[in-house]
Image 1 (spheres, one colour):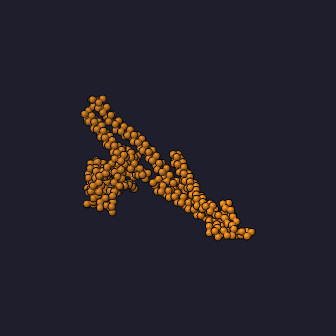
Image 2: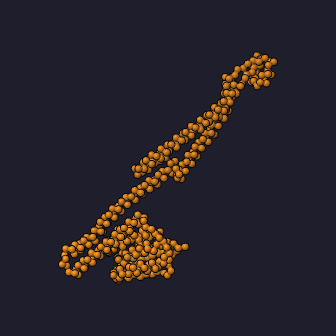
Image 3: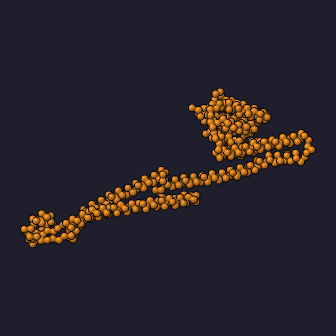
Length: 396
């Protein structure tokens, strides 16, 4: 266990063991002292009586026995009595030494064994809890394992999140297949239909044949662009989108995007107004950011009212660069605003499928902006829809 939870557990177990061993040592010392105070004299007398006998000594030998260190008793019947306590002292030294210390060591071993058994029970409880996590829930653990329970809950939630992510990925894959089948089938049917007419009706007037061929070509190009969007969003989803930042004139970037979309805007009777400050620079990937802004401006041009204008504004404040694109058209409901950056989302009605596309442009823009560490939001009020892109300026 190399986590903080493992370190805390080891510290708790070591502290608990040391506390119990210390308490046992104090209790043992008090017990030995109490036993010596209460029963020491009586026990000593019993041991001395068992290990030695009194011997009557004549008066002329008394001094010799005293010099030898024999225990002297009071006189009885006018005779001196002595006894040898060497065996007594040997027995007492054994009791006070090996016996007491062996008992103390045995107590330490027993306490350590019991504490290790408790630690083993904790491991068993944790093992059981981990095995039960397969059912999707973490069982309750004892109070002293509360931190472990929290960690297991976190792991379980992580597993559930991975499972939800896997299910979401599976759902996205199924949606991709469904949208591919639907959005490719529609233009492909038109292409096949027009080509079949051209093949089956060789006598069609030249202008009709040209119109049919032109329509089939337009549908084929639309299908080609749609496939590019599918491949691009799939590549971004797999995390294979490199972002190569460099110092870029952000104002010039906005003007270039507007110029590229000028023909499309003119065809719809929409004008593009650009308002950018001079010398506004940012540290971004110019190609990727141009693609993201083009998708947003293209969306605005497609849905703006005829005769209105699409405004492209650039602002810089602090460490952020802000791109603002607004158009006047049909208002987007709050429910649809929440989903407008989702892949394949196309709103019913004026901003719906009748404008074509696979519904990937804004999703691709969000992926690119997110890869830059930025955000993109949309608001729609009183018919004015505004997209706001904020990315770090990234310049010291």
